[in-house]
Length: 425
Image (cartoon, rainbow, N blue to C red; front, side, top):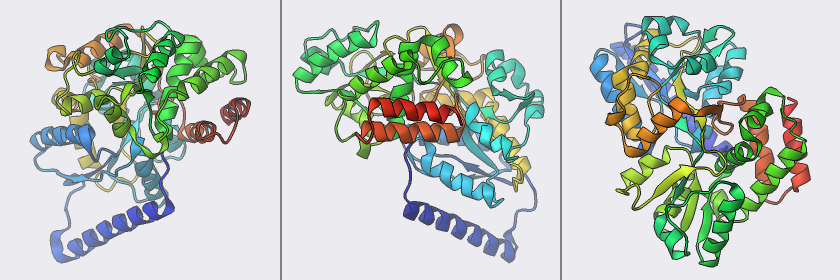
């Protein structure tokens, strides 16, 4: 996960303070909203690209469904939400929460729940009839000690390879080929490297952790991978050593400027024909389509080798913080987030798929239709890099260890030892 500098964080806090100062001045002048639901500040990291397009589409539906509630955009830019999460944590600690904030569904919410910073929204599932609309397995994954603390806006798949057919054919490879194992995949990468192209593009630390999770899944299998998070798979075991060795070799095929990039730039390397492959969540499909790239011609996609039949799951979701200044506005936003119209509009723009089972597959792109099918029939596991598998503190430790390893500051044995220590809490 990308870290932000103290200067950047200070600037963000100053901007936030100015916003609230101006709001206070406006209130003094008699413009203060007179109802708890008259507005809603929605805090996200959807500040650019397809993510912003998705947010804009969702806001359009919200304005139609709740015309009397003013939408206040609290988006903060930053890869995988790193900058937003730091600023959010500061606001929550200062008891100055937004009305609702974006988070990844699953274990990422654990720290907020333990800190008493989130309200139980189980009653909204009943009021909005979401228990009938969402898959039972998804509702179970969102439930903590009998309570639910967020409403998902979408479902994303993490274990996807995006490829440039021209680069593959230029290296003498079949552009339509998929690979049964990562070892087979790396054999193809050797040919790409020999052709003078980058075999595999990655970016800053969180994208490397994203790659790591797919390697762990491919090498350990569903049960072994899931066991990393419930304690039944030993982080210091031989199987994990083998997976980390594979990850180390994969990193040798990547671009040397990776730490200075974020995911859009890494994906762009594939679009521009500078790299053959990129492992990224399916928000990437929206980036390809936004650039007028056609699936099957300009780009192809397939599950990360060794993970076919598995859906590496994550979901963006929205919460109701304790002390939200406009709780009725937040509830109005949550209603739109969970609605069929809201999920259809949002996911068509963002590249993800609806959490609702009553959405029409025909409303979505070719890729999204394959994802809808896969989510309905594949084995589902929780994403590490995107908050579904671990609390934030554990993920941060894994990210720090990964960064040290990929920059050469530690060896493989040291990397594995740090991961094993992180798992102990």
